[in-house]
Length: 498
Ligand code: AHR
Image 1: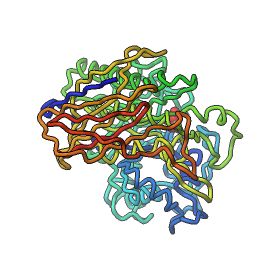
Image 2: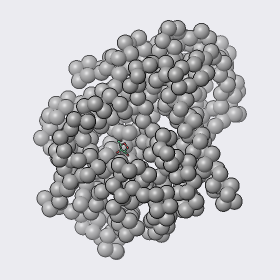
Image 3: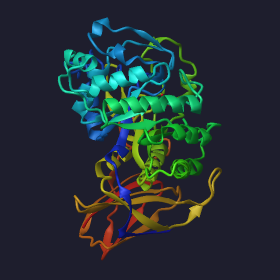
Image 4: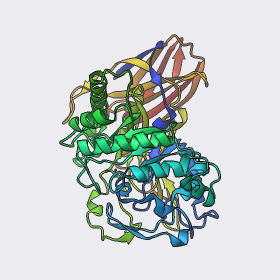
């Protein structure tokens, strides 16, 4: 099979916002306790955070982490996580039916995030709380000094404000599983008023308003339209959430699910632009895909969980090679929509549907999905180029005319390189791939790596991580044409020097 990509230096989609490679860490399961924080662990630092996990998060290079939820958020009092740890309350978390000790709170997480080199995308509770708690947390975090909340922050050891830029106005407020779920009217009004006063406290912040918690929600589209009627001029991004899975064990259908993600994004863009037109507004509202991932392996096990445990192992999906391939297709899809998707958060980061797994008092390791994310976070910077792709396609259960190749090309002028991320979805055939880079002069190939050649159900474990990039066959250059062979079922990174 052959695939031909054509790009032209002058035809671009958008500059990539670095927050495209965001992640998410919720107070649930073993994400925090025995994930990032475990004071009795052999590698624990003086604050009780695991150095082995820190090293893996740093390696991933995620620039921003959404926190503290998720469903947990909608019952959370942020004030429970400040002040002396010994006087913090233990609470029932009704979202996940567990017990939250609050040993890790705002300051501990902010310090940890700084150490791993990530900013925080702070979410505020609009389930059980409202405008007052929202304005207070912004004052606590971002106001320099001289007021009740800012001075309390200083008293708790943070002299300088945290200067948190990105904030989420609640979480999945359309879902009946959410504590304090709301109609679009109720949420839209509340979010608008919360947004207004949060920006009065700090005009520099950017706000994400909740879209539907998934494309399958019965209120999808009308939810977005109503919420934006109320909030359009107050907020900066609208959120999307989506999780994928292969319960029917249909590989070709599974690998096509990024086509569904692409349609979802385009539908939400259309809703934003409809409200823009209706309001005769000049403002373009962008998107925050702040929960996306694969989530289905752990469903059966989680249905048997006993309630009210402290940090039980829940949502611990173990990812395999086919998951790594789909994750690559999803990342490429986000990048191809970088003109409107400015923030995206892989949900989540450690232990809970995560690229990083840990063992209590034991090892930390990289799941099969770690590397496609890491490679894009490292190399996917600059400007996404529009491209034309000639390639055969296939029909599957849910989608028609799915191209065998999912690909994106990025021009990074700072590093003087063009980077191509490409997945071969064919299980039977390798593909002779060529990319004509019009307007560029290629000096040489810097990298051609692939993840390929595994059984589709192969996983990484604490003892061995076979799902990792390896050098691929040599790619060749002829003028401004790059040629490379893409192995059957492969994730590929090709970087050329200009
Ligand atoms: O990421 C797991 C959960 O998925 C989050 O808590 C919630 O927002 C979503 O339903």
